Image 1 (cartoon, rainbow, N blue to C red):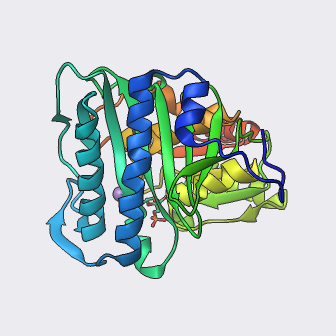
Image 2: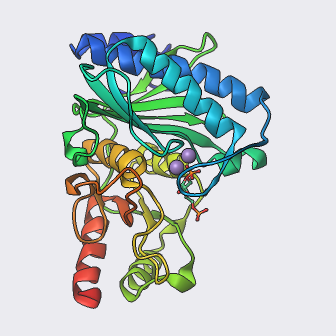
Length: 313
Ligand code: AHG
Ligand code: MN
Ligand code: MN
C-alpha cells in the first residue's frame, strides 16, 4: 500500500501495523522500544557533543561519544522490555547476557556511519532479532530486522519475514506507515561501490565496468544505512563493499551490518551475497566476523557471483 502524494496518509503507526499483522506481542514490544530509543538517539545527534569518547571498540576504532551514547540508550530500553536474553553490539567486545530465559536476542550497530555525523551526512541504527539466546546463528534464523535512518527525515524500515515496510517519524515523533512491501527490480541502474578501486580484484573490476557500461549511476554516501535505503526506496540498485586485494574479508560485519540488511533486501525481492554464497546462509565465526558484500538487484548479484566463479576460482 503506498500513500499517494497529497492524500492524507493513514495514521497507521508502527504498533498498529505490527498488531494488524498479528506479530508476537513481545516482538512488537522490542520493535516499538527500538523506535522509542531512536527519539533519544536523534536528539543526541542533533544536539549532543560529537567528541571522541576516549575509548575504542574491539576493532580498535575510536568510539565517538555518540557511538557509546546510542549503544547505552538501546541497551537500557532493551533491558527494560524484560524479554531480551542477550545483546551483541558493534560497540562491545562480547555478547552480553541479560536474562538467559529471555525470548529474543539482539545484534545491533547502534550508530552506523558515525564518522559522517560531523559532516552532517545521514547515519543509522541497524538491528537484527533472533529467538532465544544464541546470536551466532546464520542470518536466515532471524525473526526480524530493521534500520532507523537519521537523515533529513527520520525513517524506520522493518521486516518480520512478511515483506519490508517503510515508516516515517511525524511531528509527534511517532512512526507512521509510508509504504508497504517495498520491491527491488532485477536490474540496477545505480551502484554504490565501497572500498578503493585500485584494490579491486579482476571480477569486481569487471563487474563495476559492466554496470558502468550499462549507464548505471554511481551513488555512494559512505553510510551503509542511507546507501541500502536508497536501493530499497528507489526500488533498484547494487551496493558492494567487496573483498579487496589487501582486505580479503572486506570491511563490513556479518552479524549486525550484513545480516539485517540482507534480510530486509531479500524480503523486498533483492539478493545479498559474499560473492560466493548467500549472506544469510553464512555461519558467523564470531561477533567480529567480516564478509565481502554484494547486495541489491537480484540479476546483478548473480552476475558478480558468475564473474567470481569464472575469474577468481
Ligand atoms: P561504522 O561507522 O559503524 O564503523 O560503519 C561504517 C561502514 C558503513 O557505514 C559504510 O558502508 C562503510 O563503513 C564505509 O566505509 P569506507 O569509509 O571505507 O567507504
Ligand atoms: Mn557499522
Ligand atoms: Mn557503528
